[in-house]
Length: 89
Image (cartoon, rainbow, N blue to C red):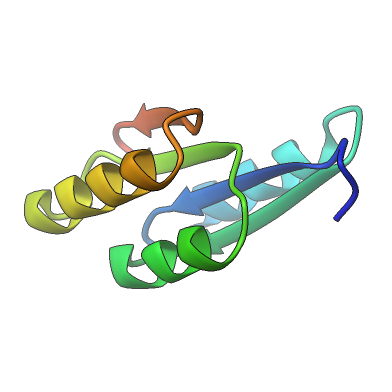
């Protein structure tokens, strides 16, 4: 990943909307790496092993897992931008 590449991590249930969102981010101008997962544990592993610039989280992710993810991601890198999206249906 080059220094100018932006890494977006999408954490939401697998759905056509999540897939469309991932394709949309990849199509934005510039270099974009997009990782997607449907659970907080996998997202935490991604955040622990590589830099993430933007964390997009489904607000429907169960509260305990969502809170742990946001806490640990921000504690590891306070510059991570977080976007909470509601209603992926």
